[in-house]
Each structure stands twice: as C-alpha cells, then as structure tokens.
Length: 546
Image (cartoon, rainbow, N blue to C red; front, side, top):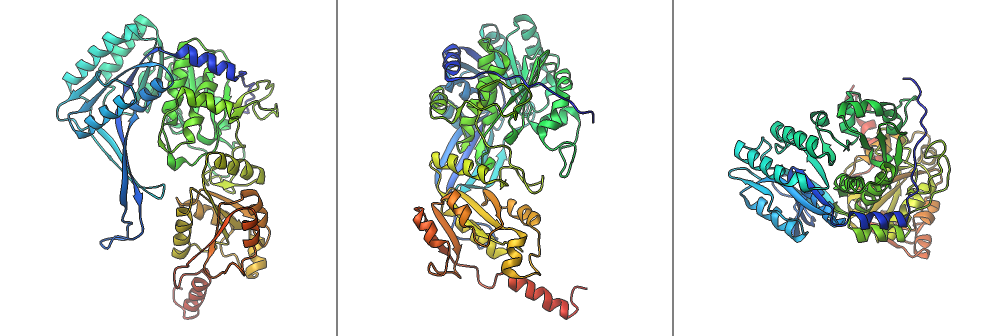
C-alpha cells in the first residue's frame, strides 16, 4: 500500500469551550429514532458449582433495568441538557413496560414509542458475579415492524422532524428502520436539512439521505470498505489508525456523509471531513467487558455540538470527552453535563505537550490524557490487557486508584495453565476490582526452574492468560521477584499460593510497608505444572501417545 502522510487537525479544547458548548446545547430539540433495547443486569455472587452441570450457581442479590441501544442514546442527549423526542417501536409486554419506566426515571418521555401487539421488546439480560459477566441472554423480535406500526412511526416522524434542531439514527438492524422509514427520512431531510447523524450497522443504506455525519466503529468500517482486519505480525501497518487513515475519502464516498467519525477502541478515533485534514481523538484504556454505551454517548455529544455550529474538531473532542466519562463506569451508562465539567476540573483531561504523537504540526493543547496504546507481545493480545512499559503501568494504576478501585496483584510463571491456576486467579479477582498479574520472563523462569523451562514462551503465556476474563492486566518482569512491580502497583491486596507463609514470602514486608494486605490462597489439590510435566514424561517413557 502507498505510504500516506497526513497533517492532523487539532482543536484547542478547554474548560471554557466545554462550558460554552454545554450552555449552547441546553434545550436543543433532538430526535432519536432507532432500536429500543432494555438492558438487564442480574448481579450476585457465586461460591459453588451446579450439580447438573459444571457451571457456577449465582445467588442474585440485585437486578437493574436500564435503557439500551437507541434508548440509551436518547438518555444521553437528555443527560447532556438536550430535549429529546424518542421514536421507536416496542412490544406490549413486560419488557416494554420496564423500558418505559426506565426512560421515565431518566426524564425521557415514552409517548412517541409505537406499541405493536404481539411484538417482543428487545432485551439483553446479563448475569454477573463478582463484577464479571458470566453470560448474556438476548431476546426480542428482530423482524421488521408490521405495516401499521411502520405507518404510525412514519407519521410520528413527519410531525416531529420539522421542529427539531437535529436528528440521530441509531440502527442496530433489528427491524425499526425499514426501507420506507429510511425513504421518508430522506424526504424530510431534503426538505428541512437538519444536522443528521447516523450510527448504523449498515451505513450504505443511508448513503442517499443527506447525512451530516456517520459514526462507524472498527468492525463496521472494515465491512463498509470490504477489507480484512489488521493481522498480527504486519510489518507495514502496525495500528488500526494507520490501517484506516488512507481510506478517509472512500468512507465519505460510500456513506454520502460530510463527516465520518471512526471510533477505534483503545486507539481513540479518526474524524474525516470533506475538504479538511483528518482529526485525531484519544481515549483512556479501560476494561471493555464492563463498559457499554460509550458509542451512544459519543454520537449524542457529537450531534449536540454540531447542531450549535461547533467546528468539527471541537465537536469531536467534546464527544470524545463525554465518552471518556462513560468508559470509566460499569455497565450501560450515560454522561451528564455535571460529570463532564467535573471530569475536566479534576484533571482527567487537560493540556498535552506537543510530543509529535498527534501528528505533524500539532499545536493543539487538548486531548483526553492517556498512556500510549499498549504494545502487546503479540498483536493478537487485547491492548488493554498486556502492558509493556512501567510508565504505562503507573498511569493505569493511578487512574484506577483515583476511581476508587481496589487493586489485587499476584505473580508467577504460569508455564502450563491448568485448573489450579484458573481457580487461583478467579479467587484472587474476587478479592477486589482489578487483577494485575506479573509474569516471569523466560530468562527469569530459567534461573528459577532450570534450563528445561519454560515449556511455553512468554508470548504464548501472555496469549493464554489474556483469554481469562478474571485477568485485567498482565506485565512481564525480568527479575527473580516482582518487588519493582509491587512498588509501582502498590496493591491493596497481594496474593500468593498456600505453599507460602508470610515468613517465607520475600515480598510480604514490602507489601505491608506500602499499606497493602498479603493474602495466601489455597491451591487446588494435585494440580501443578510440575506434576503435569512429570506425567507427560511418564507416559512418554511408556510409549503412550507416540
């Protein structure tokens, strides 16, 4: 691929800009049309396995029902100060009633929702234990709405569209945005030319409707461009940003939009605009399994800012800041105007030195402060899990500590991962909010275990441990003990296996000196890497498995 050089645009975003925008967007009339979803959370704890099958039994102690999908977008608009008209279709069922109640509690009227008899309201139910999602059940009708509901939705859109300041389409592909609805939206937009922002799985379907902006994520933009995802070991293109940058004009052409805000998870986002240089936004690393709704927040804030005439880079930074507030929360969440102001005032965002990391000629003084995207030992490892630099680790644990998270730290070789390891790590995670695992390097293991170890390289061990939901972050260390890591992490709880005592654990005095607690966890009987290796050698000696 031809090498492209870009001069990134940057805005100078400050608390003054934020306050001006928040004042300006107050009471804007925004239409949100799309798929209404009820997000359900069943939270509890698990301390035993089911007798019928090897699955955890969860004792539920709390249930929560919140607006999801397009409904969450509507709530975000309202939380940021806008007035919202939410147009969608739900079923005449309990989930529909719960969704209406959840919207009402968040000051979003449900009077514009079409109730279709016999339709099942979309719902996503998550079962959680010790802050971990164990399973999610999705149910609800995903077929297109019937003709009567479709016409009622079109009539509602025709009544409300002329008086709105902007509109958001939140299309998850669950049957609300039929072709007739999209065609009517196109006619209304041609007549009134409002700010129109589309967040849809199938963006090509909206190419002809006069869209102001679209917001594809990484997977959606790959589908739109019909290109493969970034591969591990690619020497010419090492990041999603590098991969997507050359396609700005093509994305705008395929979507028909004036602006395309492509969100790239841990790498932030790229904002393309016709006739302008690309603009970068930045984000903070987070635990993705516990975060939902940041995309809805981004779309809501971007729409509000564009509706009051903010320049695109400023609108994008406003949206990225609002999304940063949400990624620090658990579950399906929204961002309020008060939280945005507090976020900036508390220094979670601020001025950034011109280090050249934001593009040639960068003189902008704002970005969401975050460590650089973590470089994993393998590109297949989720970047938010493996940490390759001590400065990155320090920044991360500092942000967790500010958020009031309890940090658990443990370390080991984890050469051949087995049931004992998994049980141990799950137990360790249950003691706090964040589990960080220090991993002995290959050389460190050779010094401790002998020249025949490790069996698996550091890269392979990182790959396997990254697949465990209980592990939030991994970092390798070269020394024989993780004392240097402990000084940086300053864990609330330091965990080791039951074959130690406090007296024989060299790290114990340091942990307690730093204010932490040492916990010794029991090992699962007859489960160890050494036993597995011995068993393999025994079987090999008998000629079994040749």
